[in-house]
Image (cartoon, rainbow, N blue to C red; front, top):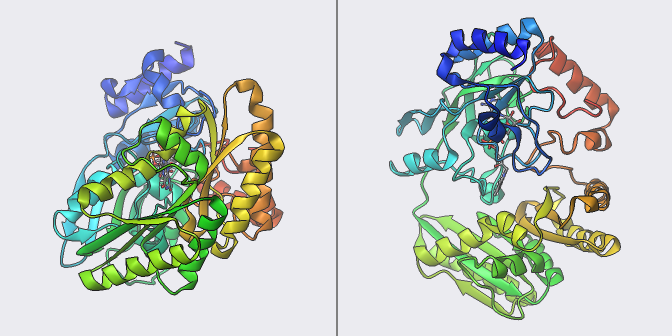
Length: 463
Ligand SMILES: Cc1cc2nc3c(=O)[nH]c(=O)nc-3n(C[C@H](O)[C@H](O)[C@H](O)COP(=O)(O)OP(=O)(O)OC[C@H]3O[C@@H](n4cnc5c(N)ncnc54)[C@H](O)[C@@H]3O)c2cc1C
C-alpha cells in the first residue's frame, strides 16, 4: 500500500468504520470493471458509506486532497460510467439498500439509492401499485444507477423513462453539501427543476442518496405476443407500421437474426422455430381484458400484413415470462456466439428504424463483423452489439462503432438512448450536441465540482 493509500484509508476508516474501507487488491477487483467491456480500472480504495453525512465527509476529505471519487452501484452500466479511470476512491452505494416508504394514497414511494430496481418494483406491486421503468438489468441494477443514467427499458414506449418518475432527490454535492431537491407531490413548479438536472448526470454533479418516485396504479391486464418474421427488413417495417396504426403497446421489442442465433446456442427459455430470421415482441396493458385482447390482435394483424409468418400469444404467465427472459438474456447470450462485444444503444426517430437496421447490417458487412441488433425499437432505441473474438480485432470494432454513431446522428437520432456517454462515447458528444452546448455543460460541471474530483474522465471529449 502506498503512503497516500494508507493515510487516506485511515482517515476514511474514521468516517465510515474500518470494515467499510477496502484496500486489498482482490477486494478492489470487482469495482474496477462494469458491463461496458472497456477493461479494468482499479480504484486505490473502496469506501462503503452508510449515510449522506458520511458521504459528505468523504467528499470533503477527498476534495481537500484532490483525490478522485467515482460513484459505484451495481456496475451494470454499459458506458463505463462507474470505472475509476483516474484511480482514487470508488464510493460504493451498496449499503444504501432500504425502501423507506410506499404511500398508496399519494401514489408516491421513497427509497435509498442502492435499492435494486426489481426489488423496488416488487415491493410496489405487492400493494397494487406500479413503477414502470424496467431496464432489462432490473434484477441487479439500482435505482441510483438508473437515476444517474436516466435508464429506460421496454415499457418506456408507453410509460417513458426513469426521468418521468423522479419527483425528488437527496443529493450530496462534491463540495460536501447535502441537498434535498424536487418535491413529494405529483405537481409542483417552484424554482428551477434541479431534479431533472441530476437525472442523467452520470454521477458527475452529485451523489444521489435518496429517491422519491411517482407511482401508478398497477394495470390489471397484460397481454404479450411474439410475431415471427423471415427477415429483419420485414420485422423493422412492421414496428413502424404498428405505431402508425394508432396502437400504443407498452413494449415493442425487435430481435434480429444474430440475436435469435445466440438464443439458440445459449438455450434461451423460448426457442425460435427454423426459418425465423427476426421477431417483434409486443405487449399491451390495461384494466379491461377484452380491450387488451383487441389491441394485441390488432398488433398481430398489422405484423401479418407486413409479412409475419406466425403470431404467438402468450397463454399464461409462465409463457410470458419465458418470452421476456429470452429477450432480457440476449445481451448476455450474444457472448455464446463471440466472447467479446461492444454494446451500443443509439436511438433514431421511430420512423427511421428500418433505415437504422439496414445501416447496421451494411456496416457489419463492410467490416466483416457480426453485429446483432435488438431492443426497444418501438421508441426508436436499438441495441447494436458489435461482436468479435480477439482483442486484436478491436480497431475494426471501433471503426464499426464510430460509423454506427455517425449513422444515428445522420438519421436525426442520438448516440445514446439510455446507457449514457460515460467513458465509451465521450469523443462523440460534440458531434451530436455541438461545441457550444458541450462548453455550457463543462461550465455546469465546474460550478458543481470546482475541484473536479467527482467521476473525472467521463462524458466530456478529451476528459
Ligand atoms: C444485461 C443488461 C441489460 C441492460 N438493460 C438496460 C436497459 O434495458 N435499459 C437501460 O437503460 N440500461 C440497461 N442496462 C445498463 C445498466 O443496467 C443501466 O445503465 C443502469 O442504470 C446502471 O445501474 P447500476 O446500479 O448498475 O449503476 P452503475 O453501473 O454502478 O453506475 C452507472 C453510473 O451511475 C453512477 N452512479 C451510480 N449510483 C449513483 C448514485 N447513487 N449517485 C450518483 N451517481 C451514481 C456511476 O458513477 C456511473 O456513472 C443493461 C445492462 C445489462 C448488463
